[in-house]
Length: 245
Length: 209
Image 1: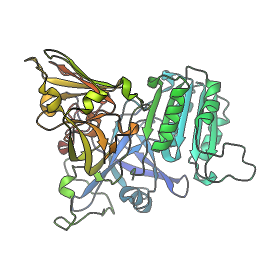
Image 2 (image 1 turned 90 degrees about the horizontal axis):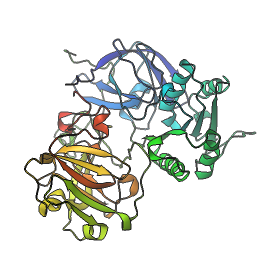
Image 3 (image 1 turned 90 degrees about the vertical axis):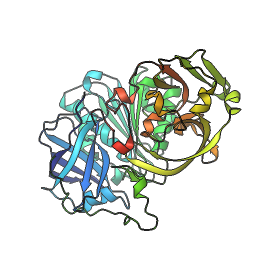
Image 4 (image 1 turned 30 degrees about the vertical axis):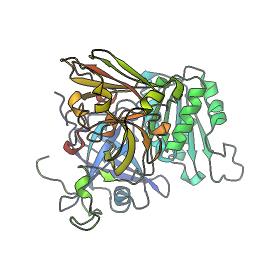
């Protein structure tokens, strides 16, 4: 009999604003069993009277002892995301359990070439993969196609720039769907078949793809890659709908 | 954890029990209500043309049976209004489906005495396992309409299994048949850390829960 995934207490050790609506929380979780990039955790908030709520969040960090990062987008009227953004401070303790999920995972040992496609906060589990790739000094050919509305909505922008400049086989390609700064040379539209074909092409036909984002983006990207001839078992998807509060 | 942990500063939002519109008794533990219909799947959405679609019951049966799409449509169907809970924590109330009860599908089938488990299998290779007792007596149906319209591919169309009393991963999208077995066999998510039974009222989310 498998034992249950235990609830643990994590202490918030760091809070970072990624954008105006997205914030990362670093937790120190004694006893954390480690995780693979792409997995998530369950968070539970409990009020004095016992009322409690749970949500799942993708893990943003590479495995690193008892340290676990989550990145949370503030959803308008979100019961949990608003609490995390407005109330939680460094030193607070949060109850969580994990890691959870064994399909949308990638480790350098799984190889590549690797195509990551993310929309909005869908980039979070993909970032865990890139961080793990860097941590393990992997040189697997990797391209991240990241879709955001505006330049200032790009999550992890500076870190992605740094990772892409490391010269270890990672390229980061952005598309900005709503507005673009003067002189923008990246894509400037929603992800479509042609964009996918262009981004996937340099990786050859044996790539494996991980797609995470809102349903429409995931459907578009997964269908496009299927039409390019990629077998279904090399297209792994995870979705964030408007209910990811 | 022996003592209940209280999250500093968390009050939460809730309807007062007993208040008009209080549906909290219909929301399983750890779930929250949603009004939209989120899509979750592990891979690309298959698009099976109806002229090549079929639904089969096979395995430990006296004689296997297969229905083409038009034959399946001709089976007695009914409307179902059910509450659905996904292991990713959303619960949606009063979802309206139309489809064929698994009881109806099994009516013309003679099960072998050792039949004990059902493996639902789908286009794209997805599988999920259920004890046969979990899909009988009006507990499961194969739906081809949602909210008065043909079930869309991203929600599992042309047809999906619906088992409202279990987390939604047991309601196999793009279902193409049921294999009857004597022994249990973990399906896709059941092999990847999710609970073998998945009763949302017992919060059987993950292996060991």
